[in-house]
Image (tube, rainbow, N blue to C red; front, top):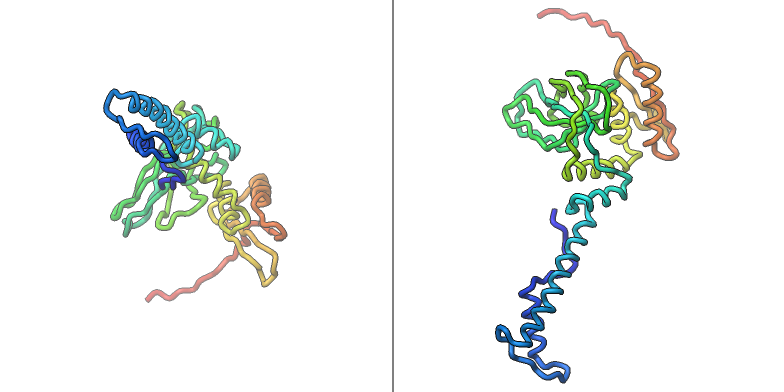
Length: 283
């Protein structure tokens, strides 16, 4: 979205016209200098001053744009995101592709935004590098993927299969091939997307924040229950995955503490298995 200008930038021609109009007006008891022909002393002096002023307008416009996340570029963007404690990701990140799919053809276009998080059990958190769309009538779409943190060992095919923040209409996600280390530097657009996600993730204390904190560790089934059994001030986080090791459970507790609302009692644990026996008559 374009930034709303708080000033009116004039180009060289506009500044020259404004100066000649003012000089020739004689306002304030001044002598009116009306010789604005090409090569005249009045016009030459006005154009010399106008050029310097027009350059200042351009420089101020660059400074103004370099102060905003949406319009800053290069080194200026690096300084903007530094206010959030971020740095541009250099080479050395795991990269590959990920496939989003569904069991039936999509009834409508399903948009997958750039920066969509993809996770896996005991795998580094990754994000898509470009926006994509699962077109109407299609079942799968492939998009680039990049690890958020540098380094790490190769991620084998099929190891990433969880969406920390589910997308309506998408049933499955997986990496069809290995993610290997690439030397490509993070682009300006990718850095802007990551900065926006950091701002959004700072909004802690919500049900969505609790769910994403757990899903980012590779837990697929998460349910957040507010005021369980009509106990105000309590929240239960139920983990539906089976065979969660103690180390992972401790990581989940620590991650939830980082986003827990102040003054709320937070309980977290695996779901209790319930065995159901069904008797059916074949008709």
